[in-house]
Image (tube, rainbow, N blue to C red; front, side, top):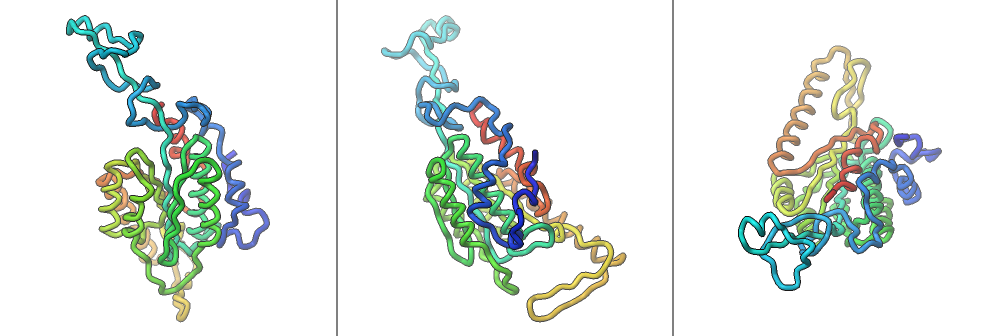
Length: 318
């Protein structure tokens, strides 16, 4: 059964504005059994993991054919190439190895906003927890970097709960609060610091509303995507996508208030057009810099929205 926000929230009246470690731990049980497709081995197996290793060996994945060398296993002789060249050749394979999965969560002040179900920051925390539990289930080592209040909290990759629980604890402690007028901190410096966590073959998930992604941030994402798989999970509130066509909206910056009638207002169409244009720009940047993209509204069922990412984790190298 797909996860619902009601299932997560329970009776906690603050569940839409904050998260708890307990709530994020329980999300582990919401992962669908289908995320185990792909015939993954037990993490205790010497061939455990979900990506391809640069180390040569006799594993599961074909790599190349090369001239036979003393000591090569004759069971891996490539007889067709041997017959064609007149010289013995053997096949080489690569083992599947585990892959560090790094989750960067943007908790800028702009994330402390929501009109449906939960703040963007809360949805981002739940998304990060689901991605982390899914990766741990498939034998990945989980590392994380949180950007909040101009500070960074980093956790180096570790297996199982040792990789997930520190992330959940940081999410619990670092939830932003509404701060009218607070500046959005650019994400470029945080992306620079990821070099301490990433190496070729790692995977990076960036969970953000993208307001802190400027040109410098995109350039750094592009540099990272040359050696890692990079995915952007764009969190947005439905009100950011479209204003209601009827009724009255009141806007405030914490000091002053402004009310506007929405009935047949040209603002509604213009507002929606601006969001769609911004989303097209995001998609264009993702294509340019080889970054996977998914957009999630705060009122969407999260497991269903993350479905491709949850399944793809188990199919790497399959």
